Amino acid sequence: MKTAGGQAVITFKNVTKYELGDNVDEMFERFKRGDRSRHTEGSGLGLAIAKSIIDLHDGALDIEVDGDLFKVTVVLDTIY
Image 1 (tube, rainbow, N blue to C red):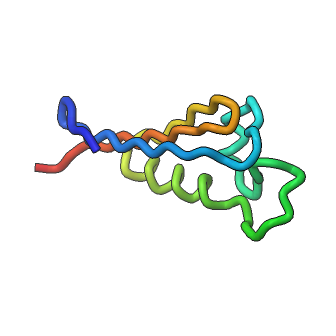
Image 2: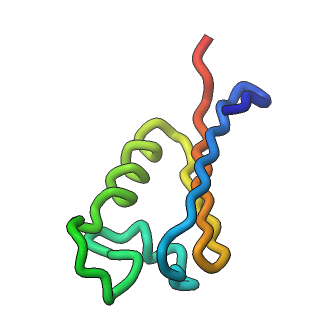
C-alpha cells in the first residue's frame, strides 16, 4: 500500500493457471468467470461485488491483464 495526494493505492498481483481474456471490463460483470472452460467452484460474483463496494466509497478498482498475470489496483481517499 502506498499513499499519495490524500489517496491510498493498494495493488495485488497474481498469476493464474490459464490465460485470461482480453476484455477486462467483462471480468466485472456478475456471474462472469475468468475462463469458460473452468469447472471449479465459484459463482463469478467476487469482482462485481468488490467493484460495487469500492464504487460506493468513491474509489476506483482497475485490472490489468498480461497473459496469465493480472494486477488489481484499488484507489481510495484517505480519511484524516
